[in-house]
Amino acid sequence: MRGVVMYGPGDVRVQDRPDPTILKPTDAIIRLSATCICGSDLWPYRGADQLSDPSPMGHEYVGIVEEIGSAVTGIKPGQFVVGSFFASDNTCEICRAGYQSSCVHRVGIGAEGAQAQRMRVPLADGALVATPDLPDADLVPGFLAASDVLGTGWFAAVAAQAGSGKTVAVVGDGAVGLLGVLAAKQLGAERIIAMSRHQPRQQLAVEFGATDIVSERGDEGVDRIKDLTGGLGAHSVIEAVGTQESMMQAIRATRPGGHVGYVGVSHDVALPGEELFFSHVHLHGGPAPVRRFLPHLMDLIWNRDINPGRVFDLQLPLDQAPTGYRAMDQRQAIKVLLRP
Ligand SMILES: [Zn+2]
Image 1 (cartoon, helix red, strand yellow):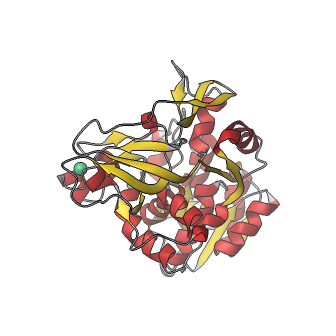
Image 2 (cartoon, helix red, strand yellow):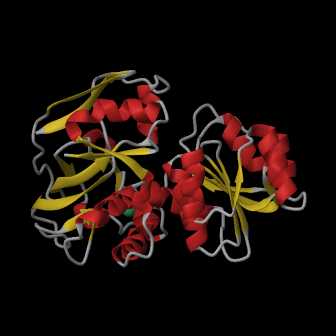
């Protein structure tokens, strides 16, 4: 089969990789209907994360089940399924508490490499959620978004306690930040402030439910949020970048007693203890337990209540993945969908 392998910064190749096989009775093999490039794939692409060996890439996937291991009972060949970036048993105490991405048996999907024609999904019964029937083709990008960016944006909004009567600010205008806007809207937020300086992203933020756009960043961005909230700051702030600047922007834009939901993969962030102490801000985040939200999000997509697939503004055949990486790196595309 064909699959994407990263050899080092800026060096992404599409090559023949061995077809996956069932290794454990709890595995399933899926044929991917669509996959995509993640903002987090840009960390190694830009050299911010080191790769020791050539690495298969990709952790976002939807597809048709082709084969199941002998212990799989809840998923059948022929079903269209969505999974997320950590496979989980969905039965342990941590999973039942809604933190499947910290499942005691969790398996990272990244090593399997979802930017490929086929992949092995461990813990298939816990990890995969099937649609009621095969979806129409135009719904596939939405389900693919649910696999990571929608689930992550949704978790960020929940962690930030976005909801009725709240003012929500969103730091980061990548796919996760934009879908954090959509999530805040669905959760009933009254006012949603998207922080973005890129016109096409501002436009999509408004389409997803943003009521205000702030193009300043850093301390100036914080001042603008304060101006818009009577000097207090937002009740709920979504952080979807993962840098020192974005994290401090999120904390400082939050009012005392408010909540930050942080989902940008943290890179060299160091929080000043004294400032945090006096801020009275709640912090909650981490790798999103996407599996917690999948059934609800998949219902919303199936019923066409939301259209998160709008974040894919470039679709390419899998073989053109290097073009897709370049487009995302240079911010010419918000998110790139690959057709295997
Ligand atoms: Zn578990």
